[in-house]
Length: 207
Figure 1 (cartoon, rainbow, N blue to C red):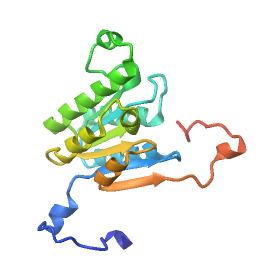
Figure 2: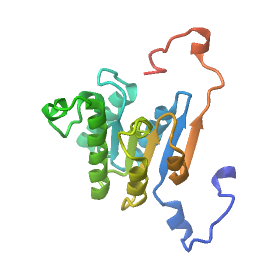
Figure 3: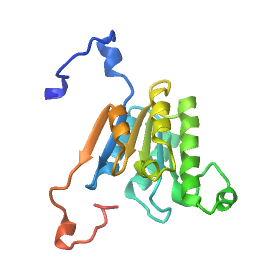
Figure 4: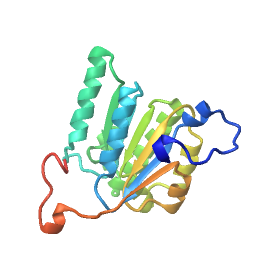
């Protein structure tokens, strides 16, 4: 894709504008770090375009405070006070999703599996309502890998989503069917990492 131009133009009956503005399903997978970081970079662009941003973190603990969360919550406040950018919502599975009562989650022994299903159910509702212009489903590959959420249902739901809603899914081991369904797939491959030399993760780089 030299200089941003496609190498082929399909005979699909769409105009250049229609094809260019088609909402994308994006997958960031692979063993190397940077999958979520790249997704949040796209979300930052979405915010700048005035597209509401919804982040759903499926694995990271509520105690794990990532720098992107603080930054996007601040951007949400900027929008509230100035109208610049767009609304931002950030939800974390580890603390119990914000739209349900914690007591309901405690009823099940397999709380993580139920949490994941609750999160996916809310995403489906938001997609149907066209609530966000950009969704970051952070580490969503894992609930699919573990069988908590059906891959086929995810693919069908995302294929049928209405309006102009971009969806970014991150995590290792993306299912081949999800990769096939996606419009853009990036695989993060490690060439070199400071941990190879015994260096632990550091502030500002890993979080």
